[in-house]
Length: 485
Image: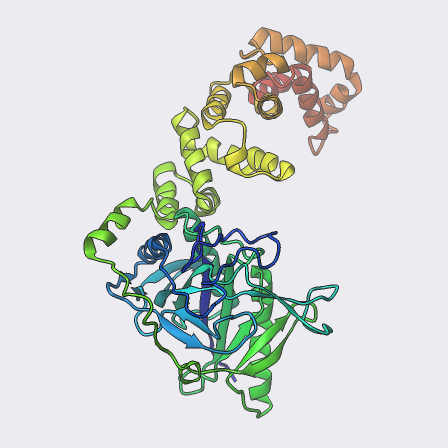
């Protein structure tokens, strides 16, 4: 039976603040000694009172505006009650009935098609601590006991809740990827799944024959995009199998076992009643008046999808090229600076996506750490366009610019690049010299025995090597063809 896959996502995005949501403890918990970034407030010592972090509110509003949400004034926090060792208060301070950002949407591209995913809301909440299991792989299974580190507890999160608008793992991945990209563009979060700055709870169901939603299953413990894709593929197949065999699905939370590649039942899914929500009276309503919201709106940069589309229209790039160049805000800024320095848009894109990307990858650095300035790279590419440098020479020049931190002019001198095109007479002399050194190849070509043109390419390569890449390849090919007649 054909059933439609229905997916909704809850993305927990750790906001980039120096201190926690309700106290002044540091949020820099990665690598910190357990239970050192804590205080009476985040440890829930009786009598302590929370104080809202205004910067966290600013970042949540900024993210909400980027997602086309309506920002709400006077929203309140609630207490969400559940008992677990990583939650010292036995409740979490979160927003329940009135989130700070309502509605909104995100347009994604998946499988070559554009699709609009609607949002339910974005709300603020505090993070829990972290359980540590003293086993070789850090997993709960096999552990005799668990330890808890409260350093992360109280870190500000924005939870972004989508509507169940996605219908495939590819759409879910595209949505998460674009949320992460937006968070980085806005400098709201680093969005690193590996460190826990971005965590995703996946809700998946299969539609009933009458089109209504089927039983929803929540998937947790997924810490990479690849794992989310695998977990969804497994769970969709599992649910179809259960229904095909006449079984009944239950609403539950399941954990993803990345090693075994399966989901396992964790607990029945709680409802809002189970959490016994009520208003947090120790915190005043959040003040988000129109003038405050407008000030943040005016501070927003160009959105990544707008920049992607502009690059296609303004610079004549393909969608794939534009997506790659605008994936990171700093990379997009760098590219536009290269073009401004005189490089043709298409050539600048090609060099950014090939040679620059190769150097970044080989050296394990980011574009923000790339020592070659956009201005110098633009000058170098402009020299290629003017035929003052060949592509072969330019690769050597760029390598020296990178390694020795030199300008393009200094690197050209060090590489022995003349900075001028070889004359036609000089190039003809080089071709004649190569012919003299390779009489057998020349004779084979003249007899018409070089059917695939391998010998001709061989001679062309020798000419380019002899001129150290300083010859125009098309001009060299023309002289070679002329002298072979």
